[in-house]
Image 1 (cartoon, rainbow, N blue to C red):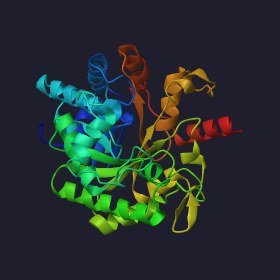
Image 2: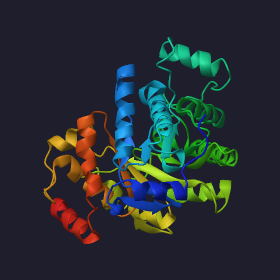
Image 3: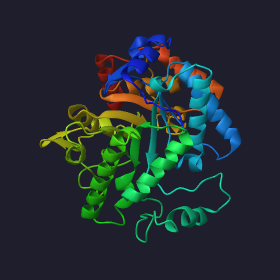
Image 4: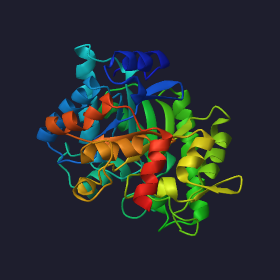
Length: 365
């Protein structure tokens, strides 16, 4: 198990020595983080994909990326193992050190293990229900569980998969989205508070440094939607669980030129004032990572405003990472060619606020 976690000194040194433009790093929570991150969502649960992901991570880090995002359910636990392998190999060949890398994972989805020869529900029965980790009624929507015993079990499995003593950021994965159809609002909020209390304990145990919420709908839908959640309420809950020094410091949500609600929709409130999800995050001291920058390639095939004489993939990344409040879009990339093309952006500074405002007015009409 590799000790340590991302540190102020380590991440700052990484930025200085990365060869990337200095403007392509953002300071947050005492760390220096690249404003493009590496995602690991897609791919078959096989060894060939493991090799591609491992190589892509090492290539990304050598290009100036120190944010790596995964989840225990991605490729049925194999994504985490590929990330762990890449970290171990980089440390062994001294191309990176643990204190330079910000490693993020997620739990909450019920997952099997692609390396275990059992069908999905056979694995769930053997590993979870027979051991009392999951009890009757704990699984909602057919795929989600956010009881403290399950989340604690999943964290320990993630640490083992990654080969790490500590994960820098552990997200609760699509919790509102996975619960709202089957439980009352009151029950969900009780589960959320219990999860935050558990994460605070794991911080004290040294198993995680921060925690957050990786979401699809809840922070960007209107407040009359059953999946809506006020970020301010979540922060208040974290303060009850961990005091002013609580570890709830990050969210992840969809944002790109098509999914623009996080910036343009006033779906949140801060002390009664209607604001966007990005504005609410900034006011509450929450860092934002964004998912689906390319909409799994579909966005690159459509029409996007042309600017900066950039190809479509770089335009997509440039728009997202230039938005106030966004730390980094998470680019899922496996082939050497895609990594090389996408990470040309690390040689280009983000847009200024004025340039972004001009662009937004252009594509919103």
